[in-house]
Image 1 (tube, rainbow, N blue to C red):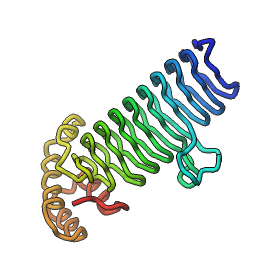
Image 2: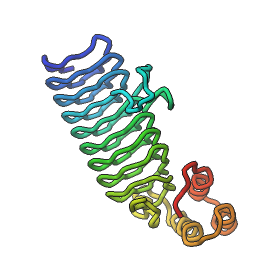
Image 3: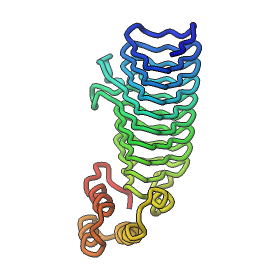
Image 4: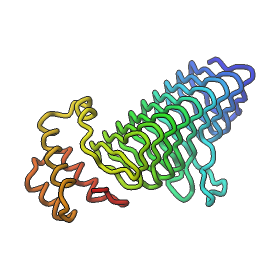
Length: 257
């Protein structure tokens, strides 16, 4: 463990093995830093924040600060970040709020590029990529392997399904189904994330079935209940197809068709 003499580490913080903490960092109460993490200089980890093993945090990052919610009144809330994440310069991640789950969660092996923001009560899966200046409002849910291009803004309570990709400069105000490619202000589905699906090893049979399901749902004006029934009757019953349909069926904010 190597802690620079100018770093301020609270006596209540728990620091793992082989951790590096750079100059002028602040590590507050209730913070837990996993084995092998590297915390560069001028990093603020405020309180009640858990950082999993093998994370790298670049300069001027601020983690575990209060929820940016006028209703928040200093209740004890938490931020939990998984292992192997790369958190670049000026990223901010807030703790949860008492009006949500009370905890903000980030999965494993994510890349959070400069100036991106994860707000209170967000729930992020594994292998997330957030490009520069992406902003997530409160209570956003991202499935595994979601990618967001630069300067994307996501409205509060939006859910984005796994393996979806949101193109840069988009404004997302409705739920985006898994495996889709989305773009625009306001963002709409523009097709399937075929590159992401192939990289994930999804079979050709499944991709062809997903293409058919997508055409039926997003290239017609048939009411939602009828179009979902049509897909279930005409498209092979595969796990990814069921996931796609269930996401659309259960969407709280609606899916743009």
